[in-house]
Image 1 (cartoon, helix red, strand yellow):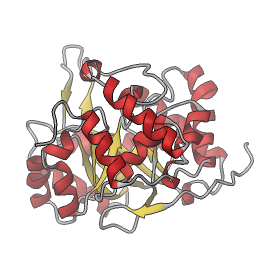
Image 2 (cartoon, rainbow, N blue to C red):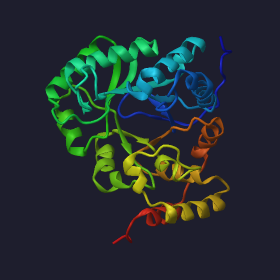
Image 3 (cartoon, rainbow, N blue to C red):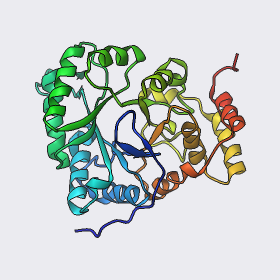
Length: 317
């Protein structure tokens, strides 16, 4: 059994209208356990580095490494007495891989009550906990019945299996449809946003987050690594990102502030009034600790807009 950890304090913010809170950066568990050996050799040291660096919100999904990431985290919780009480655990459901449960089943999204409840119980078992702090729909199911989702959420909350709920990758209109059916508020919206992906700034997503007090959780805040120390596994859409101009601007700002390019890119997100929480997904303990320095960096409005202008495909009107 590992010895108790003494984490560094990172500034925290409340999450939406709930009693939960998060460190200003979250840690993402997407690629912790691509194989069982990688889980122990790479994933565990990464998690320990994140805890020691003061991350308190840990982002999961049932499909991350086919459930192995949740299982690894569950083992860490067992080995670290008292850790569960100091952190916030978020996980997601709703994406079903091809071939499951039947061989001819297509890759699809599933927001049926049966799938939501069953997936939640599976995540609880793998994590080894009684209650998930934040449970999210991973992608918007085109066949989603809002009232059915609301009934499943209410069932899980009443049973003490989930504290709060949110969504991920939903359009503003889809958030509104689901929100209207729920007897309680959603508290987070997980979105891709970075200086390589500006869409949520333009399509009303962040505006809605401000109005509805939804905390935006930013996945891939470094554009799949293109804005940081280099990319490893880009998603298909990220392969088309053009970041040369913005990286030049990031390097110039990093020299001004005496920090790394990655820290500047993360600080750019922290500047937004919606209270964006970037999800750091590196498995390199050095980069995990480096990113944790970000809340100490404050961009001026001029610096923020200089980076924004470099990231846009055209000039501001």
